Length: 207
Image 1 (tube, rainbow, N blue to C red):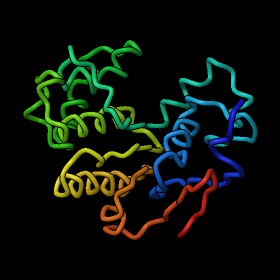
Image 2 (cartoon, rainbow, N blue to C red):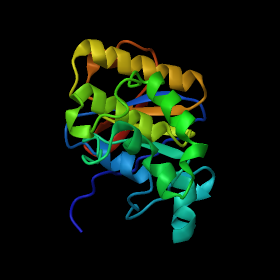
Image 3 (cartoon, rainbow, N blue to C red):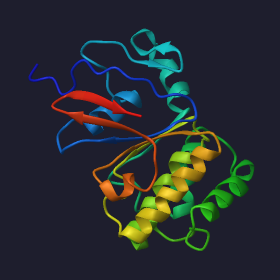
Image 4 (cartoon, one colour):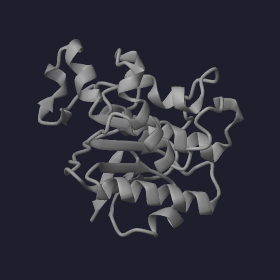
C-alpha cells in the first residue's frame, strides 16, 4: 500500500481550543485534516470524533458529524457560476432549507467577514483574499463546533493574513475550536497557542 504518511500520531482537540498545525511540505498536514473531516479513513488506528469511533459509523451517520466540522480548503472550491451569497449558502440550500429561513443569516455572516458589498458578485470576479473570506464564511455557515483551515493565508499579503487571523481568533472567542494548517511562521508568532508539528509522519505538540 506504499509508505505511511502518518505514523503513531496521537492527539486530541479540546472543545473551544485554538492550535496551529505546521511542518514541512509533504509532512501530511492536509492528510491529517482530511482524516479529521472524515474524508479519509485510516489504514490503522482509531479516530474518535465527538466521542464516536469513526470506524463504527454507518454511512448515513457521516453527514451529521461532518455538519459539526467546518473546513476551509486550500484551493477555495467556490463554484464559478454562483455568486458569493450562493456559494456561502449552498450547504443550506442542498439540505433543502427555504431561502427565507437563512437569507438574513448568510448576509450577516458575509458582513462579518467583510464581504457585505460583494455578496452578489460571481466567484471569478473576486480577488484571492475575497475568495478566501468567502470560503471561510461557507465553512462557518453551519456554525460548526470545530473549524479546520488548510493554509488559509498561503495566497494573501501579510496585512490580509493578519485580518484573517483576527477572524479566526474572534471565531474561537465565540466558542469554536480552530485548527489552522500553515507554513507561515510570522502568522504563528502573532498568537500564543498550541503548535502541532508534523515531520516525517510523526507529530510533536508544544503547548
